[in-house]
Image 1 (spheres, helix red, strand yellow):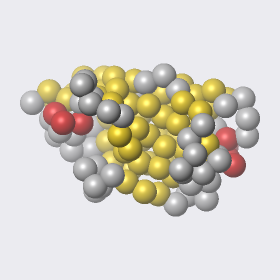
Image 2: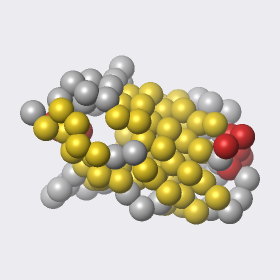
Image 3: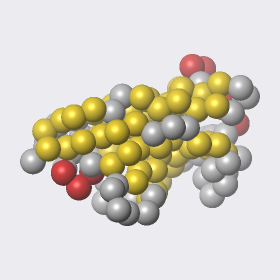
Length: 116
């Protein structure tokens, strides 16, 4: 599976962005997918996952502000990010795999910068 994330950019605190992840190469509908992020000087961290059946999970830091979704017919995943904070600034990566704990495929990241 090849993954390509897009939709990052510069936004003011309180603003919104929608990230997209386009998948190709294999049947996307059977895979779990997730979003992860890495801020400068920090380790990569979990943001959200969605199973093949649509069950979602979120990091506490984004719960209530971010929404993960998928469109299997389009082989795409999304991350709607609202009420953005400067601490959300990071490179965001989409990933996919057979389960939410086995993300075998990773795309190149997209930069999200939130200004205060």
